[in-house]
Image (cartoon, rainbow, N blue to C red; front, side):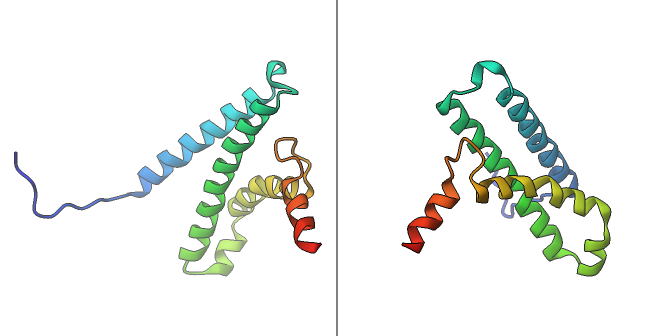
Length: 118
């Protein structure tokens, strides 16, 4: 067995695009499954769907922030329409999380905030 002296891990843009597509497919499948009548009013299933959605949205948020951070021109990045679509795609999750409207969270953020205010 020959072990190379130098190993490099190369993560190309094509790999990142493939990973993005996989995460998008997971998110879409989760959304479709979540809307099936058999899973409605099922708290364990709602928690699982929420967790998957949270992981996907977290990934997309990190992706947006990394692209913004590595952009040579922040102004040009913010002028791109597709970047706004990406931001608008994750924004509803955070609004629902803050307002506690997602049944899977049981008002998670609001209850945690009220604990701190007391």
